[in-house]
Every structure is written in structure tokens, then in C-alpha cells.
Image 1 (cartoon, rainbow, N blue to C red):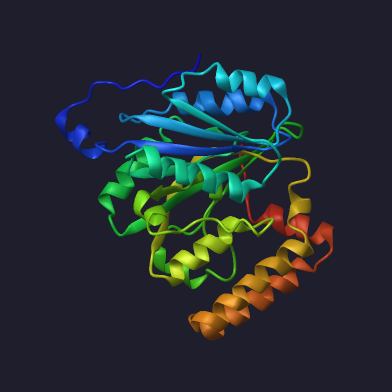
Image 2 (image 1 turned 90 degrees about the vertical axis):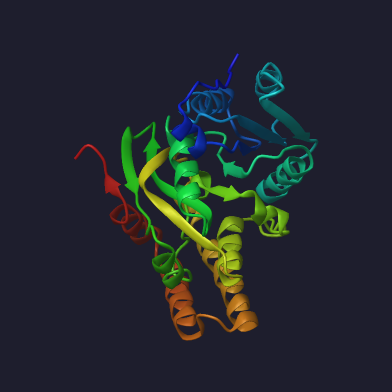
Amino acid sequence: MVGISTRHCNKNVEQMIASDIDVIVAIGPNEKKAHVEQALISLAQDGFEGKIRVYCCVDGNEDGEVLAYLRSLDSETFRVFVNEKNQGLAHSLNRLIDRILDESSAEFVARMDADDISMPDRFKKQVSYLQENPSISVLGSWLVEFDELEETEYLKKLATNSKNLEQWLFWRCPLNHPTVVFRRHVFENGYRYRSDLKMSQDYELWIRLVLDGYKIGNIPVPLLRFRRQQNFLNKRSYRKSWLEFKFKIRFLLERRQYYLTGYALSFARLLIGTLPHPVLKRLYRVSRIRMGH
């Protein structure tokens, strides 16, 4: 059974990690038990000194082994909820967020994908950073992408400070979604993922938050290992680019912020999305750093 331990610490460390953290994990139809188990064990090995509670939503996954495994875990640490049919990522995450607001007092809410691996010091570093930078409401990090079949790893970097992230907000998604930690007040103020969107729900939320005055940031170290699926690049299709373009333009028309640069960056990004798949694959590779070379 996976468990989360709380270790003794001195007064300075206690001051730094006074707050607990809840983690929201959506388990989709195709997730495998081995990957889910690996993901949750990685959370158990985090060096965070406070209490970690993991909220899991099983979203249309019919693998009996997955649900049996989840229900075998400590119910005080792992809260498990089940959608009878597949409702999608945004719906599942919103359900978990609402539950946390109802029954938990944790100051921070973290994201985690059901097939990724959290680094041992992820939450310790992120919570410490948030406590030292009270203006940041959502904090992500760099990540390492790995593909078990190709046995390759790539480092995905993003800008770190709020100013740079805001300047390029309409060019690329500013945060690696599985790495983020939210301050609780973001959700208490009514923000949720848009469940009517089938993809890029996180990107839409980041734009909405930034335009409303919230600060976002990234820690310049990889704190998560991201399992890259074989169809990962296919998800970055023209349909995805067009959907992102539409909500960007809607924001620009409604808010009249980032007006000229926002339009220019949005159109340029849409054009890139129309490029042939081999070209997109090449651009994807050059935007990452191959590790071990």
C-alpha cells in the first residue's frame, strides 16, 4: 500500500512548509494500472514535509485492476471518485476541485497526470517558492519528456518570470499543465476549466487568469517526468491550433488587452499549425533538448 509520511523538521523548515497540498489526478479510459501505480508511488516519495492528499477521478476507465488498486489505498490519503461514463479531463478536474473546496483546507492544489512521474522534491520546491513569492498564483516547472519505446528523454524548458510569460502568452502555452500548483484562492474565486472544450482547457485557463491580473511563473528545473504517448504529436493538429486561435481572438475582442501583439502572435501560431506533420515534428524536436547528449 502506498502511503505518505510526515517527517520531523526544525523550526525554519516548519515555517516554510506550514501548508498542506492536495493533488488532483484524472484517470482516463486508456490509463494502465502499472502507470497509475508508478505515478502515485512517485507522489509518496516526495520530500514535502507537510500533508499530501491525492484526489483521483476515474473517468470512464473500465480496467477493473485500476479501480481495485485505487480502492486498496489508504482512504485518508487517497480519495477516489468515479464517473460512470467518460466526461473528459476538464469535467473530472472540476469535480475534484469542488470536492477539495468542500472538505479540505489545504492552501495549495497541484496537478498530476495519471501516467507521469513526480520528482522526489517537486512539492517541497514548489511550495517553498510560492511561500517566498506571494504574488504568484499558479506555479509550474520544466519537465522531462520520456518515451519508453524510443528510450529517449527531452528537456522541455519554459520562460520562468511572469513578465516574459505574459509577453508571449498568445504565442505558446506558458505552463506545463501536469507540473502546476495553484493557490487555493484561484478556485475559491470561481475559476474552473472550461468543460465544453475538448482540448487546450489548461491554456484557455492560463490566458483567462493572466488577463484578470493573476501572476504565473515557472521554476527553472524539471520537477516531473512526462510520459509521451505515441500519438502525442497527432494531438497538436490543425484542429487544436484552430480551437486555440478561436479562444485567443475571443479574449482579444472582449478584453482589448495585448491587442496588436496578441493578434500577431495568434495568427502566426495558427499558421504554424497548418504546416505538414513532418515539419511540425521537426519543430517539436528542436524546441526541446535531448538529454544524455
